[in-house]
Length: 174
Image 1: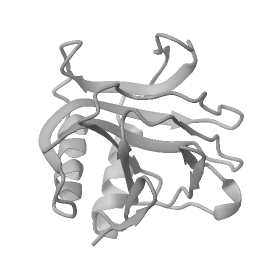
Image 2 (image 1 turned 30 degrees about the horizontal axis):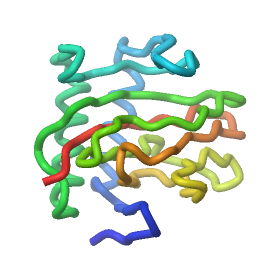
Image 3 (image 1 turned 120 degrees about the vertical axis):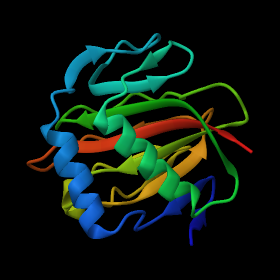
């Protein structure tokens, strides 16, 4: 079902290959992408868009948002400690040389970050790992990683010819 790697839960093959490819292709074609500065402390650039945020009253009600919520429901089917209550959904992408700075997603100890890797194809030599509490987690298509939102983490930029795309959820535990 899932494997635990220290503070990180890894869920592979969240969607069928056909559905995963559809999600990626549909998402990449949608006119929702933008470059923005969206961090209170670090002021670093993020490519993507916040699709839903209950604290900031953002609810795009787009088709992509609906697909990301269905993807989250597929993840929920595989783990037993997450709730249906979503705080935030952020769609993002990293370009080469665009490493994140260390940060947390939320200070609440009952919140989890769920990072779902969108790219349908990825070569290990392209890098793009996520570092959670000094542990490197490999970027792998159709994989979700889950960790406490108040854990320091960062995403590494790809070293290949494509963006490293992902969906980042912040959700409540049960």
